[in-house]
Image (cartoon, rainbow, N blue to C red; front, side, top):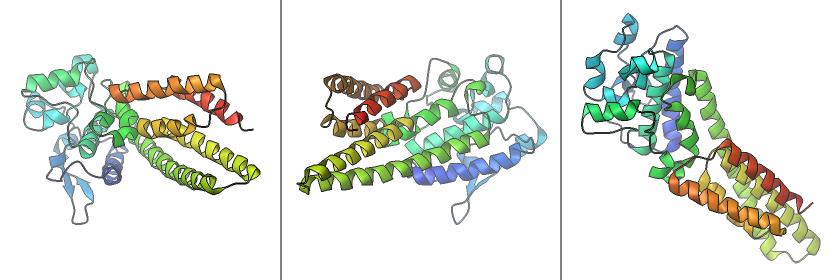
Length: 288
């Protein structure tokens, strides 16, 4: 609870993964915690998180009105803990939602829903038209997490990750893609530097193809993890190498659209990703 926030994204991922493993252990035994919040996470001397206060879970009680309206707990409550009629009963996905709130706070230093009174907070949590501010809106460097929170903090249980395993797999995918992104960035940098000093026509063509290949791969990786800032930077690099007028015009439209998404704090959708993939592969084929 007293851990200073926000924390480095890698540290946040580590903490949430370890808490998630603890929840997985409980869920495998059909135990639901229902009250995941900072005061119920104990950090050991080596900063290993341990889930505490299993009282509610052990006796199989549903959260009462008192439980969800006093202190910090309301701020970490899932919609179904406030409005069971609309959102159904609590289950394992309730813990996943609460873990998402904790993760959001670790990354941004803020809570998804805040308010002065319990009524204001409850309304924000249960109103389907009110959504949390995307992390990228708070810090553009957090854009890779926008998509994951759309599922973690979904109002309806069926729209969330359906198991801790599914959520942990998504976290692992983000880490893997980030590593690949860094590798492509290094390739892009090295190739660009070589192009600056090369005078051989054949080598220039080969290096240009390498740069285009690296740029296309990097752009698609950025798009897949919803890193809009990284995507925009890479599209700007490609802008100077597009040969076809049609592709150039479409690339300009894509750049403008990504700028719009950044401004509005909207994540990259599947349709946008598919269109980008088609466009970038067309640009790549210009050099083959």
